[in-house]
Amino acid sequence: MSLIKPAALLTRADEAEVLNVGATKMWLLADADATGGAVNANRAILEPGTDGPPPHYHTGSAEIFFVLGGSLRVLAGDRVVTLDEGDFLMVPRNVPHAFATPPEVGADLLVVFAPGIEERFEYFRLGVRVLKGEAGPEEILNSQERFDNHFIEHPLWQGGRTEVTTR
Image (cartoon, rainbow, N blue to C red; front, side, top):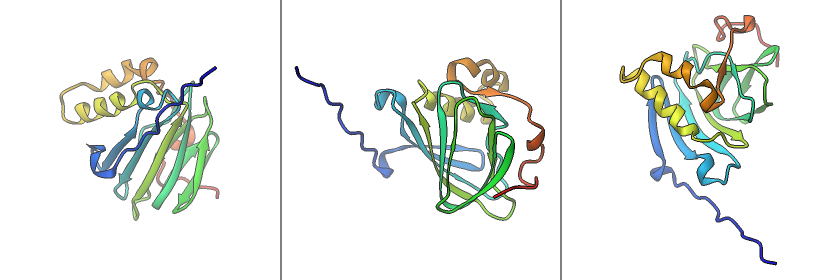
């Protein structure tokens, strides 16, 4: 019996697709179709005082954050934590989360979804089209099932960059 071994995926920094999503620059490193569904991965640099997506959860994937530089405030379930350079956070499936940078410092992040969400990079591209006025915000709301990105209200995240946090 022979086993089919998938090829390793290498994405060179200068070959990655780069998106400018408002005050965030994002490198698309690995989408689920290129990893056999194992992961999605991107690098994001957020300017100081930048909000990421509003509170949401994923039913099919955990979301993993590794801070390469700077600082990030993250809603993770029932608490808000501050992550600094070198910190790692895994948010399990179905756990509400959101993130933002503090007003005084930005963040450089590696973000991984495991297992991968099909066509995740299309979600990020849609966000760019919304910011450019080429698509309406309702398209994001209408895509929640497709991209496994389910938005919710969360009382701990109103003004998420300034809430009291726990370490």
